[in-house]
Length: 186
Image 1 (cartoon, rainbow, N blue to C red):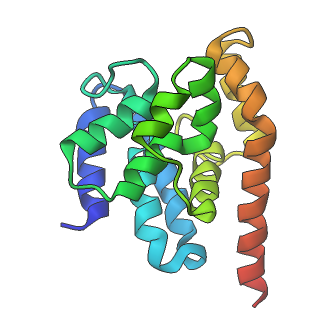
Image 2 (spheres, rainbow, N blue to C red):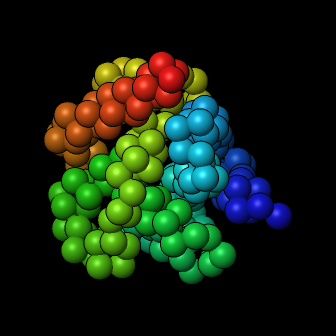
């Protein structure tokens, strides 16, 4: 079984019945990841596995702190079998360090899961997550950020986080779009 197949199976078991909308989102994020295969070539499988697993921390089997990137990464580490980079990408997806700081968990997050050194993989996962709606459809990063802020409210931790993360998210999406355009021009 490939790493992606194992990731898909684990994510489906954790999310499909309990959190069907999260499962739809995760599948859409993974579909976006597949589109980036020409950009990432030999690292595309790592992005695809991270994409399908990125929200596993919302599931009851993984939830401990209530901070899904940390809970998900810990679950993947403890379940075992996944590339360390996959676990670290899940821990840091979509600028999670900013929300971790607001929750007082940033030192814990970085100590257990150092930031992945591959900036393109980090940007690619941000791109995939932040251009996919909660139902798995494509969207823009602006619309996605607006949807998150509206769902959680501006005064919530997630609302404050998304406001602080917004310029970083848009920058990551632009870098991926620019890289994709560079490939098409060749």
